[in-house]
Length: 480
Image 1 (cartoon, rainbow, N blue to C red):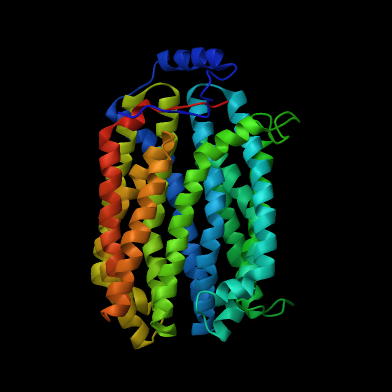
Image 2: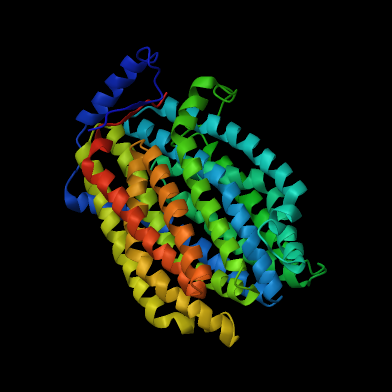
């Protein structure tokens, strides 16, 4: 089995580690209900707010897509192209959020509030810098980035308009990610969900007049959708920070101490978060090239792919909720030196996710045409999208297995292996096979998604093998 210590130097024990170990041992001796019933209740309690939050995000994406679809195929394609680029930028946000969640979860399990506070503050400082860099890059290079995907002139105009406004809101978005990650690591998934709900409601209230004009506001088209999201995200991020600044916060961030960038805490965040960032970049970059492959099939096929993709996200978002609950509970359980509890929680989360995504796969397989007709009346787009959804249906079980077990490994501090499996499955399986089946062999969008199906099988199998080996149970994360 593999044994590792994350965040400690090779030369010895980090300063203060003896005292923290005593705290951790005391936490481990505290009575904890490890019964299967208690574990199931805890998984559900942590998972359902994250599931609802992700479902709300997915519904929001669908509603925005419905509004943008009224502007025409070029607007839909531009929105999709800019979203592909945005996913790459959000990889950095996810990395910081994941690193913070893991460190805060381990510190919470070890009853070390000071370490949790330090991780939160350092992550917020680092996030501010990352957000500013993305703001500059997106604002300057937006048209070039969209054009690099192979989009036509009309699509470039629409996509660049959306991307520039998103870039302006990067600081707010990364703040929302990190503050939510702090709360989830401490076991509070409900508050980020409620803030997300308010944010999305406000976004939808702003979206229609900003896109189409009204109430004295000029029609901004696709850019209006981005402005609605940016304004709402700014308010949501400010609210989450205000909640963390409250005196009774589970992870206090009040006071001046801990805000100045420090090498030790930053290094721990990087040790945990950097592999997660590369994992997200591998995934998001792969999805970007996935879109490039689809662009070779024409604008109607791109529009069909965007609609089918939104349906797939609707299935995947609860999966991310179960994965996040696994990350939190594995981190807290191992922080309290309770690997048995970690294993029970992670496996129940995995089974629950497979049940959900398997059921959605049945809906996609048999209901694809009806799903597509909710977005468009174009027969060509409907035919392409329905065929893609049948293939997406077959990928659901493997995706569920891979997602939640990867979340379990991240919670243990093993973020490098999910990075490896994601990169391998995406770049050596999905993309080459998508190009082979979709372009070379001429199977179209269905062929592109056949590569996705095979990728999900490989990813699920690799993560299952690592999980079953059990080495993740021996990992120790230095929390301060």
